Length: 150
Image (cartoon, rainbow, N blue to C red; front, side):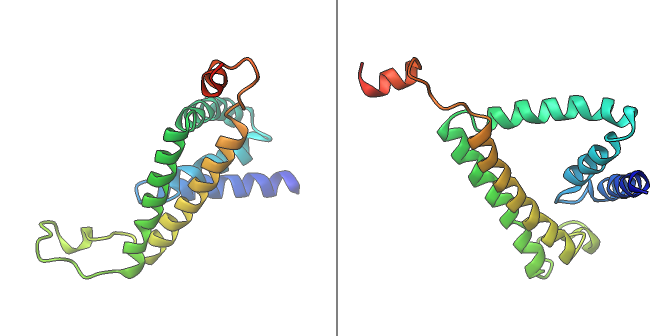
Protein backbone atom coordinates (compact mmCIF):
# COMPACT_ATOMS: atom_id res chain seq x y z
CA UNK A 1 0.00 0.00 0.00
CA UNK A 2 2.85 2.37 0.89
CA UNK A 3 4.56 1.76 -2.46
CA UNK A 4 1.30 2.42 -4.33
CA UNK A 5 0.77 5.65 -2.40
CA UNK A 6 4.36 6.84 -3.04
CA UNK A 7 4.19 5.94 -6.73
CA UNK A 8 0.80 7.61 -7.19
CA UNK A 9 1.95 10.75 -5.40
CA UNK A 10 5.20 10.75 -7.38
CA UNK A 11 3.42 10.50 -10.73
CA UNK A 12 0.90 13.16 -9.68
CA UNK A 13 3.76 15.53 -8.77
CA UNK A 14 5.61 14.78 -12.02
CA UNK A 15 2.48 15.57 -14.06
CA UNK A 16 1.77 18.68 -12.00
CA UNK A 17 5.40 19.79 -12.46
CA UNK A 18 5.14 19.37 -16.23
CA UNK A 19 1.97 21.49 -16.27
CA UNK A 20 3.46 24.17 -13.99
CA UNK A 21 6.88 24.23 -15.68
CA UNK A 22 6.16 26.98 -18.24
CA UNK A 23 4.59 29.24 -15.60
CA UNK A 24 6.58 31.29 -13.12
CA UNK A 25 6.79 29.31 -9.92
CA UNK A 26 7.76 25.92 -8.59
CA UNK A 27 7.19 23.73 -11.67
CA UNK A 28 10.71 22.31 -11.84
CA UNK A 29 10.86 21.83 -8.07
CA UNK A 30 7.54 19.93 -8.09
CA UNK A 31 8.73 17.79 -11.00
CA UNK A 32 12.00 16.86 -9.24
CA UNK A 33 10.14 16.15 -5.99
CA UNK A 34 7.87 13.74 -7.86
CA UNK A 35 10.89 12.10 -9.45
CA UNK A 36 12.51 11.78 -6.01
CA UNK A 37 9.44 9.96 -4.68
CA UNK A 38 9.41 7.63 -7.69
CA UNK A 39 13.15 6.94 -7.30
CA UNK A 40 12.56 5.26 -3.93
CA UNK A 41 11.16 2.19 -5.72
CA UNK A 42 11.92 2.60 -9.41
CA UNK A 43 15.53 2.27 -10.64
CA UNK A 44 14.82 4.22 -13.85
CA UNK A 45 13.72 7.24 -11.78
CA UNK A 46 16.80 6.95 -9.55
CA UNK A 47 19.06 6.95 -12.62
CA UNK A 48 17.42 10.13 -13.90
CA UNK A 49 17.45 11.82 -10.50
CA UNK A 50 21.14 11.21 -9.67
CA UNK A 51 22.61 13.60 -12.27
CA UNK A 52 19.97 16.24 -11.47
CA UNK A 53 20.77 16.02 -7.77
CA UNK A 54 24.53 16.23 -8.38
CA UNK A 55 24.18 19.25 -10.68
CA UNK A 56 21.79 20.98 -8.27
CA UNK A 57 24.22 20.56 -5.34
CA UNK A 58 27.19 21.78 -7.39
CA UNK A 59 25.34 24.88 -8.61
CA UNK A 60 23.83 25.57 -5.19
CA UNK A 61 27.25 25.37 -3.56
CA UNK A 62 28.64 27.70 -6.22
CA UNK A 63 25.87 30.25 -5.67
CA UNK A 64 26.74 30.62 -1.96
CA UNK A 65 30.53 30.05 -2.12
CA UNK A 66 31.32 33.61 -0.97
CA UNK A 67 29.39 36.17 1.06
CA UNK A 68 28.86 38.50 -1.93
CA UNK A 69 27.46 35.61 -3.98
CA UNK A 70 25.27 34.55 -1.07
CA UNK A 71 23.91 38.08 -0.70
CA UNK A 72 23.29 38.43 -4.45
CA UNK A 73 21.57 35.03 -4.59
CA UNK A 74 19.36 35.91 -1.60
CA UNK A 75 18.41 39.31 -3.07
CA UNK A 76 17.57 37.84 -6.49
CA UNK A 77 15.59 35.01 -4.87
CA UNK A 78 13.60 37.51 -2.82
CA UNK A 79 13.01 39.67 -5.90
CA UNK A 80 11.70 36.71 -7.91
CA UNK A 81 9.45 35.69 -5.03
CA UNK A 82 8.23 39.24 -4.57
CA UNK A 83 7.37 39.43 -8.27
CA UNK A 84 4.52 37.04 -7.45
CA UNK A 85 2.90 39.97 -5.65
CA UNK A 86 2.20 41.45 -9.11
CA UNK A 87 0.06 38.40 -9.93
CA UNK A 88 -1.67 38.65 -6.55
CA UNK A 89 -2.40 42.37 -7.08
CA UNK A 90 -3.70 41.55 -10.58
CA UNK A 91 -3.30 45.01 -12.15
CA UNK A 92 -5.14 45.83 -15.34
CA UNK A 93 -3.34 45.33 -18.64
CA UNK A 94 -1.47 48.57 -19.42
CA UNK A 95 -2.20 50.38 -22.68
CA UNK A 96 1.41 49.93 -23.87
CA UNK A 97 1.18 46.08 -23.72
CA UNK A 98 1.59 45.02 -27.38
CA UNK A 99 0.47 41.37 -27.01
CA UNK A 100 -3.05 39.91 -26.77
CA UNK A 101 -4.87 40.31 -23.45
CA UNK A 102 -4.53 36.63 -22.55
CA UNK A 103 -0.72 37.03 -22.36
CA UNK A 104 -0.91 39.60 -19.55
CA UNK A 105 -0.04 37.82 -16.28
CA UNK A 106 -1.03 34.29 -17.35
CA UNK A 107 -1.98 31.82 -14.65
CA UNK A 108 -3.82 34.21 -12.35
CA UNK A 109 -3.76 34.25 -8.57
CA UNK A 110 -2.36 30.76 -8.10
CA UNK A 111 0.67 31.64 -10.21
CA UNK A 112 1.31 34.50 -7.78
CA UNK A 113 0.93 32.17 -4.81
CA UNK A 114 3.37 29.74 -6.45
CA UNK A 115 5.84 32.51 -7.21
CA UNK A 116 5.80 33.84 -3.64
CA UNK A 117 6.08 30.29 -2.31
CA UNK A 118 9.01 29.61 -4.63
CA UNK A 119 10.76 32.70 -3.33
CA UNK A 120 10.33 31.58 0.27
CA UNK A 121 11.52 28.05 -0.53
CA UNK A 122 14.46 29.50 -2.50
CA UNK A 123 15.46 31.72 0.42
CA UNK A 124 15.31 28.69 2.71
CA UNK A 125 17.58 26.82 0.30
CA UNK A 126 20.06 29.73 0.29
CA UNK A 127 20.22 29.68 4.10
CA UNK A 128 20.51 25.87 4.17
CA UNK A 129 23.20 25.86 1.47
CA UNK A 130 25.29 28.50 3.21
CA UNK A 131 25.12 26.57 6.48
CA UNK A 132 25.61 23.06 5.06
CA UNK A 133 27.49 23.27 1.77
CA UNK A 134 30.10 25.94 2.45
CA UNK A 135 32.84 24.72 4.79
CA UNK A 136 33.77 26.96 7.69
CA UNK A 137 37.32 28.31 7.41
CA UNK A 138 39.80 26.17 9.31
CA UNK A 139 42.95 27.30 11.13
CA UNK A 140 45.09 26.68 8.01
CA UNK A 141 42.76 28.56 5.67
CA UNK A 142 44.71 31.27 3.74
CA UNK A 143 41.68 33.60 3.78
CA UNK A 144 41.49 33.35 7.57
CA UNK A 145 45.24 34.02 7.92
CA UNK A 146 44.98 37.04 5.60
CA UNK A 147 42.02 38.41 7.56
CA UNK A 148 43.84 38.06 10.87
CA UNK A 149 46.99 39.72 9.49
CA UNK A 150 49.34 36.79 10.12
